Image (tube, rainbow, N blue to C red; front, side, top):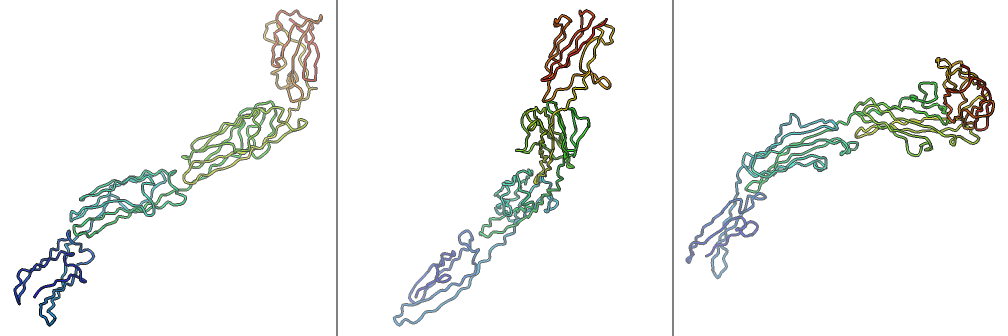
Length: 421
């Protein structure tokens, strides 16, 4: 007689750690030893741990009479495997952060069986490292500890699209019997982007200097500027969010001609002031020296994240020639250079109020001051100047009547001035 041992589904019993050794085999009697090594490091019992084996007893009878069959139902009982545990020092796992906030905490993974642990961090649909998160994944026997560090940089995140982030801290144990248990700690982070106030221009432009008589003028009303004069204006924008950086700039494509124009951009936290300086030449006037309009478009923007806001301002400027009434010019006709401090010099500028008629007429795009000469009765030139703001002290000149000649582009003025001591 002989034994035949069949494993589960007819497979080799050695696949699950079983050996069967025949100890003696004499006519009519056979004996053997069944040995099952259930060491889970040799065979994998994680997917199946209950088995049916078949032991066949056959003889060599020529009549082929069936032998006997013994069915064995065997079960491997695996040792208990505790779950790993993930904890942290967070007071809550639902966190709200400012858009430039910081999140730091310590996470710990442990296993009571002292199994090897695979401790790692993953994001729900994203890679935490792409957000600037640092966390050192670890492998080893617990307890394992690692720091979660996230210093948010709003500009590196697309918070307009997504401001909620879910992180998973996962600990898998590596059981000697190849069974894996795990624990997960979920951290939900909402980034509060807050409300961003838009910057806004004040509706008036402050006149820093120029020929204008008013202190401010409305930005949306056409302001008349005289050519050949220097005009300087301040443009201010304010933001109700004092931490926002405000920038004021000219919109591209809407700049005025470059002649005599200077724009100084403005920048500041909570408010900003830009500066417009313009000394427009006569060449910018229209045909026939008619007035000509120019429009400036300014942009005030903040640096808020994730949503920048802005305001625009249109400034309307009208260039015109200076109207001059030359008939009002009535220069003084006497001065006394005697050193008494009264009427000691002869000049044709700087007079105010009732004496403004003494001033040389202002230059415009048609008539400009050229020069003035003074001659005595013999025609000898005793004084000449091309400076309209001249002062003549008359020193060394005898008392008497002298003749002046004032030349503009096309106009001329002649008259007398008396030197008296």
